[in-house]
Amino acid sequence: MFSDNLLNGKNILITGGGTGLGKQMAETFLKLGATVSIVSRHEEHLIGAKNHFSKMGYHIEAEKCDVRNPEELKSAIDAIEKKTGSINVLVNNAAGNFISKTEDLSPKAFDTVIGIVLNGSSYASLEMGKRWIKNSIKGTILSIVATYAWTGSGYVVPSAIAKAGVLALTRSLAAEWGHYGIRTVAIAPGAFRTEGAWSRLLPGEEYEKEIIDGNPERRLGTKEEVANIGAFLISDLASYINGDVITADGGQSLYGASFFNMMEKLPDDLWKMMRQR
Ligand code: HXC
Ligand code: NAP
Image 1: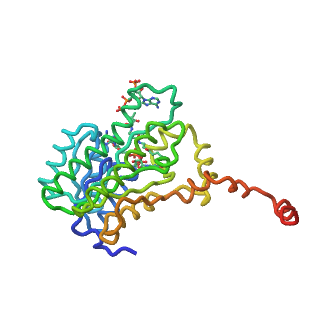
Image 2: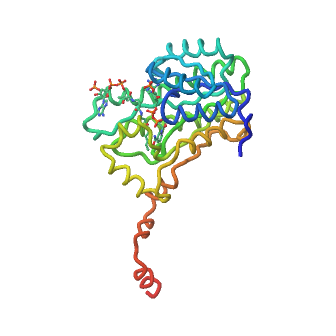
Image 3: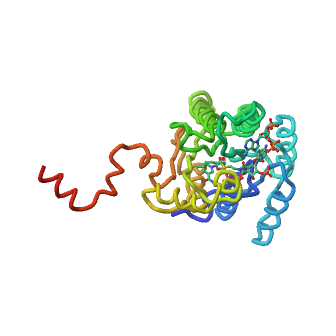
């Protein structure tokens, strides 16, 4: 569907791009002709990704930075722009999350998740937006949210609060910065097996089966499925999409929400009886 040069001229910064979905987006965007840089906290993730892409024949810039710290973000972006030129796409992908009963959380636990997801995405968007407006760059911000940004979810309450905020950021900036030619868009992924998410969210293998059984497609998503939507949304093919979110969850969030979907388990004789009645 995509031509190999779809993302030529895109100079992309992915926060948390050294692992999981962020790393897959980096790979997909590189293959489509983009220049890609990543930032995150851990050297091993940055160096690991850099070496991984180098073996594939691609060069990426990687800077250590905690998105909760606006000064660190600014320095990392300065360093990357010095080497690659002006960034014109920001992917707010970095996240922190873990399951917990809410009553067991400390205020610091809330601050930590909200700090990474909501503050980090806000600081990065602000830093890039200021540069783009000053230099008349028509940039794009893609944020990775979750379907519980709308519905909320128990046991991941700080993450749900933060993702709802990032969704509001996406919609608000679309309205405010659209006239500068800046687009803000988002993807709401369903369940994707990544080391980062699975280790913090699933108590055991059997819970993966529950997730799969609770999905109308009876499967998890693949990382490529998110990355391909990302490639479309940041490309010029999506130039009139602004402030919107594409959900990629195989229908999971709708399946759980509707009263009658449980009738899937109804045996044929009961369907017959209902029709006769
Ligand atoms: C309760 C916890 C906790 C847990 C940490 N805390 N883990 N509380 N249950 N499992 C509390 C700590 O006790 C501490 O509070 C506070 O949170 C900060 O913890 P630190 O370990 O000091 O934080 P830090 O080193 O900054 O690490 C951040 C982190 C960590 C979020 C806690 O897990 C991390 O680095 N995560 C990054 C990657 C990640 O989370 N990926 C998953 C994304 S999946 P006190 O008061 O005790 O000091 C995702 C999508 C989900 O977002 C959607 C699926 C459908
Ligand atoms: P992941 O591999 O754990 O990715 C999170 C990344 O964020 C890591 O690379 C981590 O790198 C970085 N990060 C965390 N805190 C940071 C900070 N303070 N500063 C800078 N970087 C930081 O998990 P993932 O599953 O790929 O998640 C990627 C995105 O998809 C997240 O936004 C997540 O909420 C979203 N999502 C995932 C799923 C899923 O099922 N996997 C579902 C819905 C939404 P460092 O440790 O090196 O900092």
